[in-house]
Image 1 (spheres, rainbow, N blue to C red):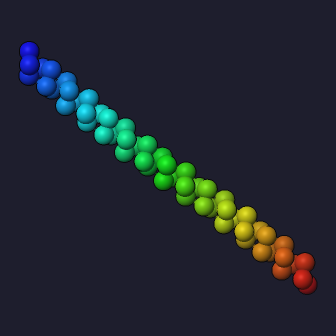
Image 2 (cartoon, rainbow, N blue to C red):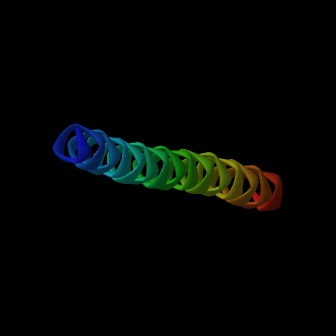
Image 3 (cartoon, helix red, strand yellow):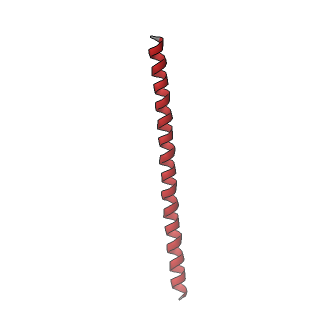
Length: 54
């Protein structure tokens, strides 16, 4: 029985590690998407400013 409990505990720990890694990946993807949106907004502002000067 102690072996079964030990195995269940190890499985749970591995699951928690996987879930934590998934969350870190999701956060990185969200940061990249946010950075891309900000870049597009800055590019659009720059284009508008340049067109306004002409």
